[in-house]
Length: 92
Image 1 (spheres, rainbow, N blue to C red):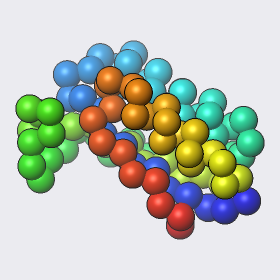
Image 2 (image 1 turned 180 degrees about the horizontal axis):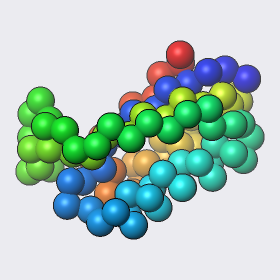
Image 3 (image 1 turned 90 degrees about the vertical axis):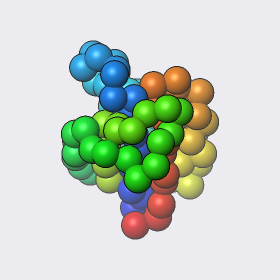
Image 4 (image 1 turned 45 degrees about the horizontal axis):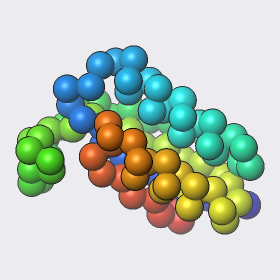
């Protein structure tokens, strides 16, 4: 298993329950064949440039260990989630 870092940005106007649902969905996908090491909620920050007409977003950092196929599944899930405006997965 490799170590990965995932950073994603949730719409700033999303409710707290929606943000928690996105965090729980990420944890579920990783737990299928890996383990979540750390979830760090950075909170609402100003974006460097507007994304989908938003000037700020709610940032979350997730460190996890998983097999090679998990980042692909995470990428697929985050792309179809309308509450996530940007995400990036890197090998740590």
